[in-house]
Length: 448
Image (tube, rainbow, N blue to C red):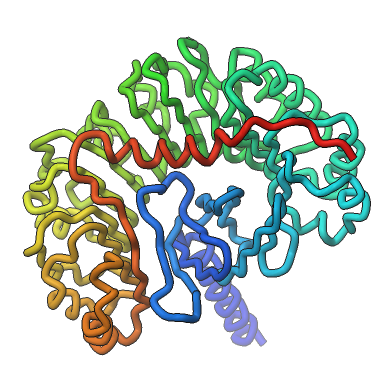
C-alpha cells in the first residue's frame, strides 16, 4: 500500500510539473481566417496565407495584443489557437461568438443591446468607445457590467475630448472592473487620478499627458504598460513608475525623442518583456538592469550600433530587431548566434543578400523582413516550427516547393514587411497606422 501511495504521489508531481510547463509557455502561434489580424502596434508588416484556404498564421506573446481593422483584443490563455474572425459594422465575432462592440456612429440600434443574451455578454471581450457615452445606452452598459464586469475598455476619442473622457471614466469605474484599459485620447492630471479607480487593471495603454511631471497611481494588479505620444514634449520622469515596480511588460513608443529619463526603468525587478522604439535608449543599461528579460523588441536607427559584449549568454526567448542601417545584421549576426542560447524566436529586417542561417540550430520560430539572404541555408533549419519570409520570395512556387520539401514540419507564412531603408521610417509607419486607426472621422451621437 505504501508503494502504491508513493507511486500515485509521483504521478501527481509529474502531472503538476507538466501543467507548470504549459503555463510558462511564452510564445503562441495563432492561426486565423476572415478579417485581417495582426500584432497590435506592428503596423510595419502584415501576414498572409500561403495557399487558397485563407488561413494565416502569426506569432505573438501569450497575453499579447492583436488588432483587426477596427478592434483590439488580447491573446490571453482562454483564446483558442485557431480563430475565425468576422466583423460586421461595429461588431466583432470570434469563432461565431460576439467578442467586440464599438460604440460609434455605426453602432447597432438600442434594440440590439436590449436583446443581448447572458451568453453573448459572457463571451464579450472588449467594448470600444469612439464617442462619449450616450445617456440612452447607459442602462445596457450596466447590464453588461453586471454579467461581465472584466470586459476590456478601449477609448478612441478625438484630441479635444479630455473632459468627456474624464467624466466617462468616473462613470465606468462604478460598474466595470476591466483587466485592460486603452486610452488613446488626450489625457491630463485628472485622467491619471481616475486610473486609481480601476484597481483591477492588468494592462494599461495610455497617451501620456504633455509636459506632465507626475507618476502613475498604485495599481495592484498592473503587469503591462504601453506608453505612446507623438508629441516631442513628452516627459517621463525618474519617478513615474515608482508605485508600480512589479511591472512585467513595458512598451514605449517615442518617435520625437521627448525628455525621457531611462533610469525610470531601473525600478522594475520583474520586467520580462520590453518593447522600445527609440535611439536614446542605452543597450548596455538594458542588459545590466534587466538580465532576465524574456522578450525584447528594439527599434533603433543609430549608425554603428553593435550588440557585441552587451548581451552575454542572455536568457532571451524572443528578440525583434528592426535597425534601419544596412550593415547592422551583417556586423552582429554571429553575435546573435552566440549570445542567446535560449532564443526561440528571432525577427528582424534584413538587407544582406548573403546572410547565412546555418548556425541557428535552436530556433523554433523565424521571421525575416526585407531580403531573404542565402535561402538554401534555411533548408538546414529542419527544427523550425514556423518560418515567415517576404511575400515576393514566396510568390515563386519553386521557392515554396523547395522549402516545403526541406522543412516538411514547418508552418510557412508570407509577410509583407515595409522596407525600412532610412531615417525614422521605422517609426513613421506604425505611427501613421495608429493615426489612421484611432483618429477616424468626426462622430456624432446616435439615437434610437
